[in-house]
Image 1 (cartoon, rainbow, N blue to C red):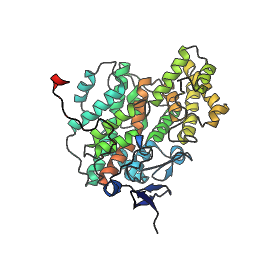
Image 2 (image 1 turned 135 degrees about the vertical axis):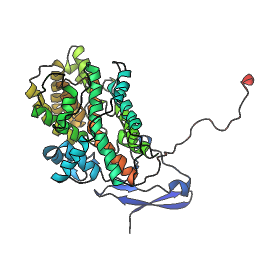
Image 3 (image 1 turned 90 degrees about the horizontal axis):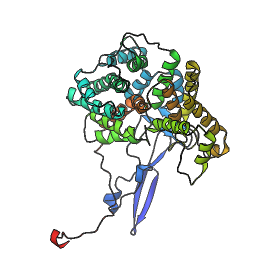
Image 4 (image 1 turned 30 degrees about the vertical axis):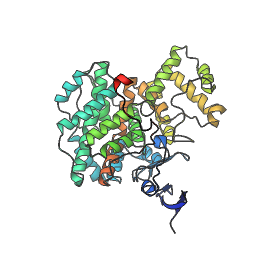
Length: 427
């Protein structure tokens, strides 16, 4: 007999079936609840609501587990590459060498952007936030690629994916180069995907750029760790917008906007802003640790703990090593990063933080790496978006291929009851 939950309401019973996922998680199917009882469920923030079935990413916050298509994140970060992980997320399996070579060539075929987009870039003031620029440029791709994707065609879906994977690093780099006052840069097909991203960001006209393997490896791992994270705010946004049959570029643009928020992708920017505030206030780490422990003080340590991971963030363990390697390699003497090291040490040793599982998360270490690489603070979330892109594409493709219905949450109305209109002279 299959599992079920019995709901008793107004003297009648309703059987609600229970589904079991491949990792033995359980879900109550309430799709017929409203039609059978007139009831809806209330779940602000959808913390207990499954919006879809997905084969892409598994996340266990209690156990600190993260898997892409069944592969543990630890194995992928150690043995794989970001391009392999892109293929895995979008196609469902790790590629053979021939498949990987074709994938790289297909991405490179589209790693250019129309010169007309520079006009849009130039229209933004230099003070514009890079995420605002990026979401606008991504949405603008729809105008330059107006043909709708035939979701019944595997070939067209694939072409849409590699088109965006090819163009996105160029757009992301343009947002940084605008901040730094550098001319736009173009892709180099002789480089790997991550090496090309690095040169797009940093290469100056007439100068050679050192592609240090320690730095490239750290960036590769960061992008892998950010590639997908189940039904988070931005992934859910991409699926929700796409459920209206909006195109891929428009849906991804919406996901970028969702990622921008400080409670989501903007968290790594918030980490560096917090470190700067501590430095500007004299750099007294103990003072701010005391503030964090004071329940009456509104100050909160950014980059510690995680909404989903109740034990530890498995991505943080991986990227901590990369962060240490980058700092050692570059030999940076930065007071902001010294404050970060002191906060990290305290959080890992102080019983207050250990007992509450307030360990440094991936946002803490990614912010440190980006700071060390001289990536502007406001660019941190753009780098996050570059990493998350293949996950967004995979989520959008899965939603369209499954022909999921248009998203339309319900609500509990608590406004004024029925009332009559009163003419303005009688109010």
